[in-house]
Length: 101
Length: 456
Ligand SMILES: [Zn+2]
Image (cartoon, rainbow over all chains, first blue to last red; front, side):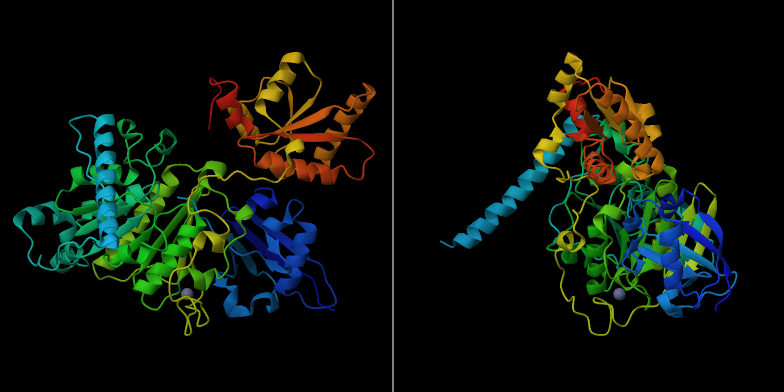
């Protein structure tokens, strides 16, 4: 049994528009059987926070192409991406890339 | 007679005449005292060597004195600048501030590429264009403004669409490239071209109140594809005409692009290789985050690249290399209503319900001359939206007729998406709805029915 985890979620580059235009969310993930990986977090976000048009944020089990994910300001690629185990008080940032000019 | 040779020669003549026509047209539409530079269409044209400029004149020393006394620049840095060339792709909200600062700083040669002409809706952010220059090529307009600030710079305005055929030939003449474009396909094209040509790419973008800046393919850092191997699904991409943008936001990012280009050209380190700057004008924050290293498996800059020449980027991204909205065709003909038909419904007082799916802020700009329910696109699936529709249905059913629900938006794309969503949403209710979308939205209404109706 993994304990619940408190984390901060940040959304920018327009991703916040999918979350009631709020850029920072402090959330408490409930305790669950397995540990809280980023993959679990994404599923949790989809089921609990993302009511409108989830396809604008996710594709399959991961974020859609064009969204960068940072954990405590570091690219999630360096941390194992979906398999990273979330630590208490982590800040996880989702940045949608902009294309306009 | 060699026909191929003759065809080639005629094509060249044709191009030359075309640019003459554009030039003469631009003279017609502008103040006759204003000098509009002649555009260039030949990407292969050779330019004079900048490296022979090895000594600053007294005039240059006076002009650049305030930046010359910076130890990081100095005479060496200034000479470097004057020997380097920068290509700016996109003469819009990013390209305007970037080009004027590069010209002011004394870059040797400045090329500006844009396929488009100046429009009234550009002027709130594309600040080098003028009211008089509406209708003339953006590249010529920007260069005209830069020339007035610093005539020592060699300027090249290209009035063309950058594509897989011309990109490499164009880029090879320049030392640093700025991505000041406004669409995904052009961003991948520029990235691949810069990797193949070995040029640093200073990339900026902006939307609403936010901007982003990175330097790609510089001193072993990552390229755009290292970060984004797959393009975003087209329906997730928002352009400035749909999402809106406050003019000063691309202004700030464009200035930062000029700054990084100046640093690279003067031989200094760039601050944004393997780093991404996030600017949020609403919160007043600048934030730099580290991004991944160059990816060994990157298809274009990795160890075993499979992209060794430019590909079809519009196909790769599933979207055009511009920021114009393309008309979607989601609904069938009988699910749509033409503006003329809707006008006669209004004239005859035919009962119907009008649903406007734009944001409330857009309804304040203009709306059709009939009462409407507002269900914005970001609330289509909300319970309250369903209730609104159901309540309407109840009222309608009491009249015993199947009353159509007409869905309207700005350009007739969102309205089609909305009709599909509404149909899904109402499937499990026992109400019978007939949903139709107003073909071409308010833009078509303005064009076909009411030419006093505002277009935005
Ligand atoms: Zn790469």
